[in-house]
Image (cartoon, rainbow, N blue to C red; front, side, top):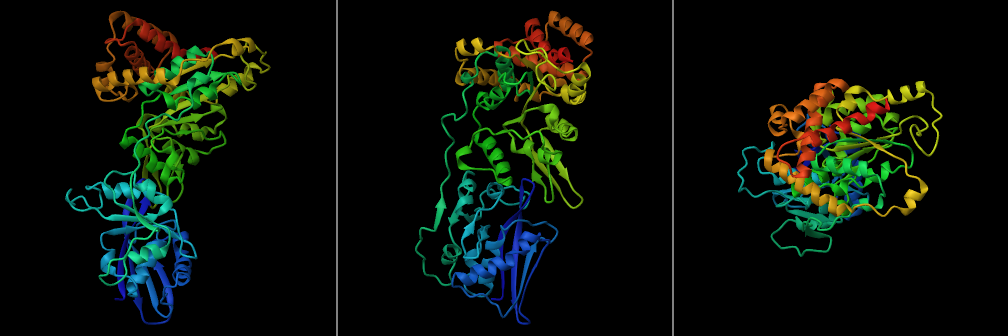
Length: 520
């Protein structure tokens, strides 16, 4: 048979669209043509596939006119994931493997010149696309229909097997795959290079740094507990060495354990970015890009679009240290994802959407030298320098950060003599209880409240309403600031086990909106 068809998938954002690799062998001048909107790295598969087939002892039809079509033609294809399906298509078209046996399988993998299979990005996204019966490529597919099996390199197969219900097979070498699809009815004995991969269970113990390592800083610890309970964002301001980075790196441990669905979402984005590793399975990510990161590095972009740091921090924490030092365009690009929990990358030829439901933990110094207001060291900055430094953060961005907290410097004797702080496990237990109250009441965290739900769920007594109106008028708050203060107050009430939001809860929430204004 001179025509064969092998199934694979191409990545477009977080989606894994189906691709049919069609191979035709014809008489004529020897050539190897690859069509179907392929990027340069896909076109280079011609040389990798040729060498891999020849070096494994198989026959490459060098005297034929080889045409490989990656359909649909208008879908961009990138990376070396199509090496394995192209090689199998050539072998099936030349009769070296049985094309009928390839039905019911999908393949992806990069080939070395010797035939070894190398890992590919987005294996988890491919597995998710297969495991969801009503995926957009087959919305009419019955739920009971048998799902295709997925064949991947060993380094990619384990992450793909994390999806419940997926049938994943791993292979070390091209020959391991070929042996399973040889012509004829004889059963082929399974070798070490070919095996079905079993999924891993969610971890039962936490692997996060302990907040007990941070001594003192009661106000900052309280703010992080509120942020974890309600899903709020935090801005910490303090002098160098006060513990801002230590606090931020331990924040993920305060959050509830990830569900299987959340873990799959987070791992799928990490797989697209080439950052996923099995030891991080079901652990909430903490992404901490350097302050020289561009807007594209933060929110994503490129052609084809790749996820940025905000998407890689999905269901986890985005820590931005030295916040005013980030480029203004990069910080302003965060405004929409902070509200929507998603980012859409639009290009002339394609459009991709990535999830970005992260918790922002930001840190900054109060001035260029960092010692404004410090009792340990005098500030040497002029008022104009301080104003310009703090003015790098726009009002709309600060308006979207729920909690502003000052982190004071500790003297040497305080640092040495202060006992360890409260452990992460104890704080997480309170966070889980408070989140449970919010979810039972409204189906989500307090930070996600919008519109009328804020008025319904954040009920204030008369004294609290009067207090909030007075504070908002004196501080000149916008409508967004008032709503965010209400949501923070609702979280504080949940931590206290209160049904209604009272004056003490509102008063504490107001303090977290005043810290940066006081510094200005």
